Amino acid sequence: MPIVPAPTPWAFPHHSTWDPDDDLVALGADLEPGTLVTAYALGLFPMPVTLDGDDHLGWFSPVERGVLPLDGMRVSRSLRRSARDFEIRVDTAFDEVVAECGDPERPDGWITDSFRDAYARLHRLGWAHSVETWRDGRLVGGLYGVSIGGLFAGESMFHRERDASKVALLALVDLMRDDHADRRLLDVQWQTPHLASLGVVRRPRAEYLEALEGCLDVPAPAALRMDV
Picture: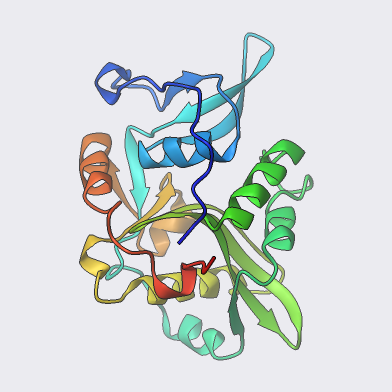
């Protein structure tokens, strides 16, 4: 089981007060472990935002949430072939995965040092995990996210070789397809054209929050459990 962090001192606004047309629902708070775990359990995730020239910590709950159904990932024959060429590991290079995802040379990069430090703390407590693709002893791709019960909230992914991040996502789906698969939720925040090509669909905010409430008491997948 993950180590329970100190409670957050912050109170997030109830979802009934959220603007139905705006993905951004709150500003402020912090990136302490207790705050992050509370936020994800409420359907929120953090990103930095700039408003009127000032930088803020923003909390988002997309009006249309990107979700990958565990029985809906589109796996081409070429991707299946590629998957045979990689070794899958879990949580052996978390910090490196986050660093690669936060490479400042990537377009639209937003993962700052404070975010890297925050998710590293979550990882050490057993709430954040990486799924990695390796070839010949080298890390070549992967993804990371937050796991709470039956929820895996994907944050970002990267690849150094073709298909390496897709194979990591396929591996995550396989890890989540256990006896509790029907109550699990794989959240990817927003549906992009690339993610749509892999089977990610849009779910209305209310539908997502209902599914989230029903999955938090599900045991985490065996590969993502932490014995302490």
